[in-house]
Length: 389
Image (cartoon, rainbow, N blue to C red; front, side, top):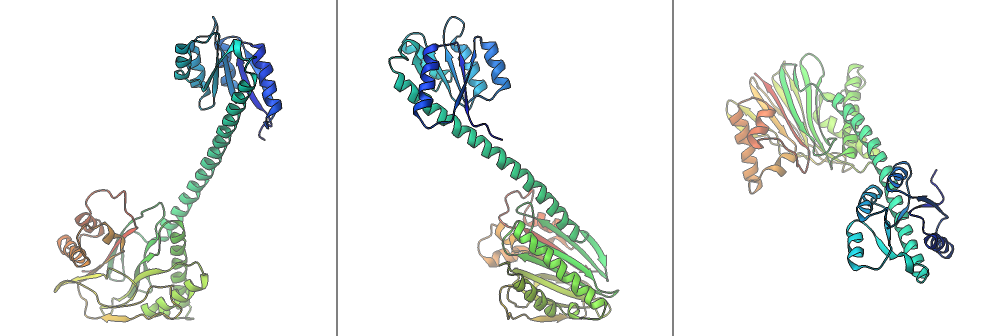
């Protein structure tokens, strides 16, 4: 509960000052004021350590020097401090201001300029009240930020738990990936799903935007594909065996959420028994690069973003006789970090990196493209490789 009055610490009792302070509080719209007094610098510092005063008024005399003012001002900072000088000396006024005083009055002239003194007290109390409010808002903000950090840490842990192992061997393929979020949470997401002993579904998705709202969609995406897998295993739906049907299901459910979010995605289904790769594209760019005995090239295919249109168009394509190959997928965040001029040059950089690293995985590809630690990425970056050797 916040106090309903302001407090003034008056150092060196001055009767005129107390009377003028009371008059100031009676003539202006301020909360009641409680005045405490101190007769030594040590006692004043002790009171400042124990209590939070709105205003400190120091009357200089043989027992209080301007050096004492500096100590008191530092301890009372950022709230205001007033100095009462025994006589009008310009050098003393300037020195008092330099030592931390917000205003200076001459003790003997307080009664003659009571209205002016009262206005100064009022102004300094208003200033102190604003500082107190700002400090209160700062404490509340820091508390909220602390709670937000805890929430984000929990959300990050959930998102990390949803991701597959970074190095997975399943269904005849070897899958590896690298995720670099631009914020604490990522809107890029990857998954590798073992459908049965021979068939493996994999995808790289990039949710629009980044941060917590985009990360929430990755949770929904994981839930959708898990549900399609459960439906397949109980023979109620076989959509997961078709990348294009999987995209249509994700599109429909994402629109139904009315989150105003969409995503780009490349999704593939590898059949180890038949050595085939079936894939579909939902607004994804850059297209994945396939590397085989013929070199490296971008896969072909078109498709609209997922979750943006109620009746989108997707294409499904199929590659056969894939005895040895590597497919490398990127989110578009990688393109924003490349300094090459023009999209053609950036895409050539991607192909060169895939060829140069010779199947060494996403970490090596990233280093070939963007050496060192990335601290200022404007968007999430994801790299995923799927290979059969």
